Image (cartoon, rainbow, N blue to C red; front, side):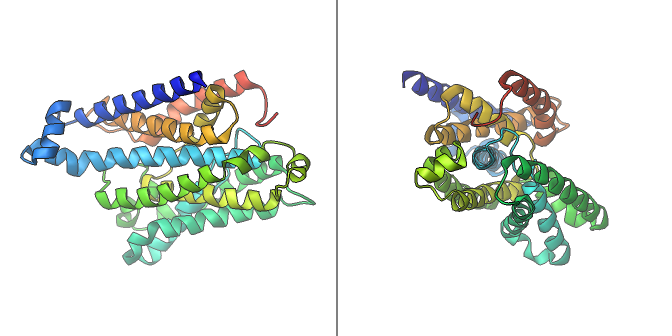
Length: 327
């Protein structure tokens, strides 16, 4: 138990440190003490600019990272496979396609973007689920079908992007994958969706633990396996779709964080879910901070940083583990 507490403290300290660095670095530089004083006094122009432009970006990065990581934890519990992730099985791509389609047809409905994203993500998941069913539900089959669905939706999304007006695609976060233009309205939306989804995920943690067993064993312990998979998947879709609607398509967060969390804490989802949320927030904020500061004033999207770093890291984890989730 002592080791668990220490590891939670380490991730929290690291997260606070990255938040402090992210607030104080950039085109406008302030000291941390100056920022805190300016937030209370309201008389510091530099702090006011940071409050309006940089702070919403930081908060969105934190919440998007948290919900993507937890979405990955839930999907891996459903499929008992470490490669299960909203980006891999098409949920994020489905959310992106449906959002772009609806905005192309009805631009005035921009503020309904999270709802469109959820519908698209849910549609992608339903396709994966229905095509995976064959005298039962095979987690491996679900993953393979998900890869095919993801490829299909990605192609459709690219087609829609090339056909849509530039004004639509440039204002749609699911095609930009950047946190540059986040506002306090975006913060409000992602916090509402994210808080609900994260709370539901933690409440379902005992079901996730049971799904780590064989289906027959879980049923003998009183779990309705099919219903549990549906409900947990719905929460995962909610989280991934909200992240796609506000933060764009970010790869590898839901793939990298859960294995790290399992190595640090074990397989109890009551601990995995909050730890993954903190680690996911840290990863995305760190990627965004590096992207906007390393070669400033040129900005590298967080999605690019995560892709460059995530691929080799994922290969390393898979080689070290050499086993599927739950085995």
